[in-house]
Length: 118
Image (tube, rainbow, N blue to C red):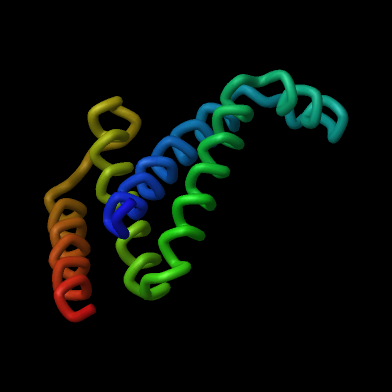
C-alpha cells in the first residue's frame, strides 16, 4: 500500500473512532465503576471503537515504518480533523461557522505545503 493510502485509512479509522466514542459516552452508565465496565462491555459502540482504534494504530505504524513520522502524523491528524468536522456537521452534531471553515482551510493548505516539502 502507498503511504497516502495508509494515511487515508488511518484518518478514516480516526473519524469512525471519534464518532463511536461519542456514542459510547452516551450509552454507558458511569454511576459506579462496575456499571461503567459492564456497560462498556455490552455497548456495541465500544466494540466498534476498539476495532477502529486497532485499524488506526495498524495503518499508522505501517506508514511510519518507512515514511516521515512528522508528515504522517500531520496528515492523519489534519485529514481526520477536516473529515470529522464535515461528518459531524452533516449528521447535525455540530454547526460550522465561517471562522471554523477558514481554520479548516488553513489546515488543508498547511498539509499541502508540508506534503510538498517532504
